[in-house]
Amino acid sequence: MSEQDQVSDDVVLSELSDDDLVIQMHDDLYDGLADEIVEGTNILLGRGWAPYDVLTKALVEGMRIVGVDFRDGILFVPEVLLAANSMKAGMAILRPLLAETGAPRVGTVILGTVKGDIHDIGKNLVGMMLEGAGFDVVDIGVNTDVDTYIAALEEHNADILGMSALLTTTMGYMKVVIDTLEERGLRSEYGVIVGGAPLNENFADEIGADAYCRDATVAVETAVDFMKTRQGSAAAQMAGS
Image (cartoon, rainbow, N blue to C red; front, side):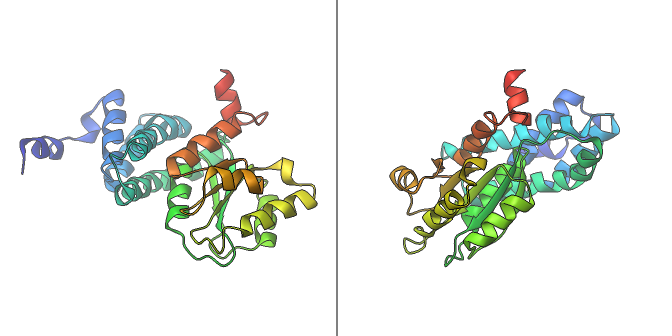
């Protein structure tokens, strides 16, 4: 065991100041240490922190750091999945408390892999990263048809629709969904982001999507930017403060 590992092992979270604990939680999130995130979350709540402050200052900021290093090629998918799962462990504690306090949500995103396609690793990663950024995420799974997408958008009063495809033979179905939204007079109600290995910006433009997201970090950045344009959203309020 290296000296650095020994020092890390000797950290007692409950003995840290609030500021140092938050920084340590960023590190623990980065390292995918779910038990430590749960402990840190409970310590901050026990010290009187508002659940929304724990979410934004400890978890969301920690996932932002993870997202930057993922974008820059320093972290890779398995490591980001570990970090996201650790964040979810903290969210499991915070979610009911946030509901009780009526904390502002950034927005609601419906995610699904299109009809004919059952690939979900990329979609799942996007969902976890979005949740880590403070979004309510409704994952409606794989092989999703247009009626299922639209029903979920309306049921959950969503802001954004995210569609994924990994096959060239299924990516065209995204246009079916967008065209149907147009036909039903719903297209302007939602932001539409698309992603997947065979896609590119030109394809997204051709089918009428709002944005092509090459990876989970870009998806989060795009979703946050979109919500800043939504009147009354938490993102818009934070942008204006």
